[in-house]
Image 1 (cartoon, rainbow, N blue to C red):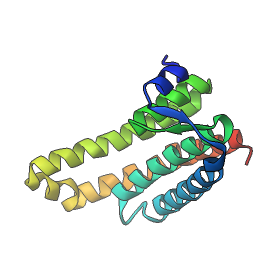
Image 2: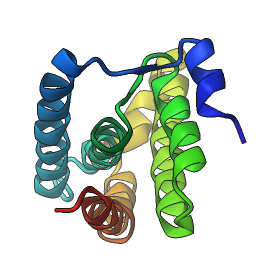
Image 3: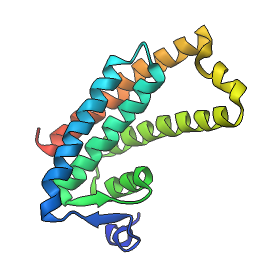
Length: 161
């Protein structure tokens, strides 16, 4: 496990200054709720975007938790660093399993997008067929129900909501 102090020395994490804390917390309280609502509203019609915004809801509530409870701000390599910090501070295996699953989905989509960028023909195949649209719709529904919502609920408990 990486130590928080090591991440601070590497400038991947910093301590939030008192004057910045309120603004930072307010931003992530709004951001995770916006992303959660966007994910919910787009589960069927825009399934890939639902998965992406669902992951960002998880990511943002995690950063909210780190700010409110530990006054930590993620500076570099934000996705991987957020998970490293969470692993160091939280011993709840279910929360860690869910954030790992969310991150894996996000990385999978990013990898798909990177491939599509390199080979433009694949971009049409990516969501252009009825089969792929249905596949992503199913994946999106499962992800929202089985990963995003349980993670958000657990984090809200840790936040005292």
